[in-house]
Image 1: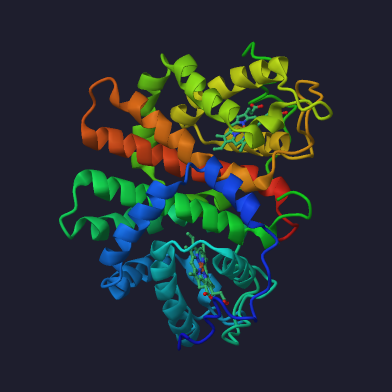
Image 2: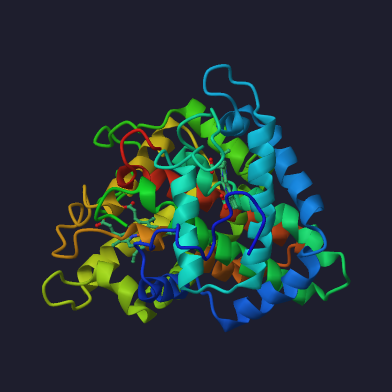
Length: 195
Length: 195
Ligand code: HEM
Ligand code: HEM
């Protein structure tokens, strides 16, 4: 379907998520995620779909400015940033903006969240792009990045003249979605039986 | 110093955190936490210190309304909510509101964050209060709860007539602090070498 290298959402190469849709329903309740959030994510979709590259410029700028973050996109031995790797991941990151805001959080989506987790973890980092980079995105930064990602998204959500209330609700829906997604991604990092 | 049962912040019974203050500085950079956030947390301190019980009523009401959350405060065998356990943890939770807003994030505080993590994890859950409850607070809900906690705090931050900008910044500082703290708490859940 897609011609983004390594973007395998909805294909048979993605393993089944260890988290069931029933578990996920409970997780949504814990974060107060409901139908209203789906509605506001889809409202944001119409805004972000034309601004993907500009949003990525901001996010990549942030990661690039922090050596301890850039390390995950750098050569394992020489520590130099890997332009090809950064570029290939960037295309999938752009697709992620669209998928998050489309909010079609079904079984295929759940499965792909687990795949994204594996790709951050030593289980599968670098494999998709054959990148000679570090073995692991450290757990310690995974959830921290939710703040800069959602905070810097806000001005984009506001730039088409939506009411302050709509912007606030789109932003909250993004925050909840990120908390849910990064929790799903953390599964490979968590000890057996503790998730 | 304190007469809250089981609140051992700053005492020799708290083990050293496996996360160093240097690591923590990098984590702060990842979440964009800086001196301004310390300032706004302390501004919130003057507000929340007189409202601890009212805030706890809201948070406990939320946990009490969700069976899968209340389970962590219930009997391991009969599944009935444990009033004593809920009450004892509540006092330490109240102190946590004060400590978070005091924002004295030094070595003693870092060590106590690890202790709080152990107390959610099977390593040490129930031990402090001798509670006959479930073995583990599941990882899947830890970060999710950050949303309801910070979202329901907001009206309290606004009730003393601070400007919209001050309320916004206090709220953002709380969100960042919670992302940092829950990440520290997750350490016992994460596989060796993956943190
Ligand atoms: C809010 C937190 C984060 C979000 C939303 C996010 C998002 C993403 C997305 C969408 C992808 C592409 C997934 C795919 O292959 O389809 C990705 C990959 C990647 N991310 Fe993250 N990420 C987060 C945290 C981090 C952090 C803290 C780092 C550390 C610098 C990081 C480093 C990477 C790397 C190195 C890859 C490529 C993994 C591979 O080899 O396939 N991410 N991320
Ligand atoms: C934002 C997320 C959370 C925050 C801020 C938070 C805060 C706290 C605090 C401050 C304490 C007392 C620590 C002490 O002993 O000094 C505590 C203990 C506890 N929390 Fe959480 N918590 C969070 C997530 C959760 C979740 C999702 C559950 C599941 C229902 C949970 C269940 C418990 C339990 C059972 C204890 C008592 C642990 C023991 O036996 O000592 N917490 N929490």
